[in-house]
Image (tube, rainbow, N blue to C red; front, top):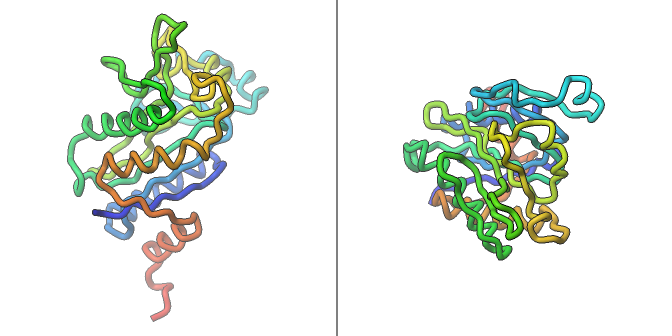
Amino acid sequence: MNICLTIDLGLTGYGEAWALQKRVVAARKAGGIPDVLLLCEHAPVITLGRNANKKHLLASEHVLRQKSVELHESDRGGDITYHGPGQIVGYPILNLGAIRRDVGWYVRSLEEMMIRATAEFGLEAGREEGKTGVWVKPAAEKEAEKLAAIGVHISRWVTSHGFAYNVETDLRYFDLIVPCGIAGRRATSLEKLLGRAVAAGEVTPRLVRHFGEAFGLEMKPATPRELQERLAAFEHPAAIPA
């Protein structure tokens, strides 16, 4: 079973996380490091995917500044989404060439690992036909609400970007956008669905375990410093003493 390093970055700026992803992707393409799952939370940020319609951004630049929400364009798939505190964001850097060369299967597997993690809280989550992500239909609602979003990028079968799972997210920020470009459909969170406080620490281990099962990987915790050391060894091999 291949190893996947699990790195918890904590609260990390979106730009900083994207720059780190690019370094990890380069090293993974060259075989300089094993597969990696980066986990983090972001300060409030709205991101636009490659196929984003800017009309789905409902707030003006002035409002975004007032609310201290950053705006970033991205090379991931999908439309527009929000990231913020209380949301677990996962960036898998996997070599699908060694797992399975199938983009659709990869996205469905990301959905499946979150569906299974959600089931451990006694909630039935599922998919919506023609849409990505994980959806839950509360008893009092007519339509399912979105618990988790997915937007990926794949280059030479190495993945980047990934998923965002709402744990205790302030859902009011989603009113600034048309989430994922789907009008009339709302986002939800594990906290809202359960009607109680939920900490990310309750959820992350479950997501990591089901991630490993979905992709047949042995999940090995590592620190951000260990990742930086591995990247430095790959990027500057001449600097390592003989």
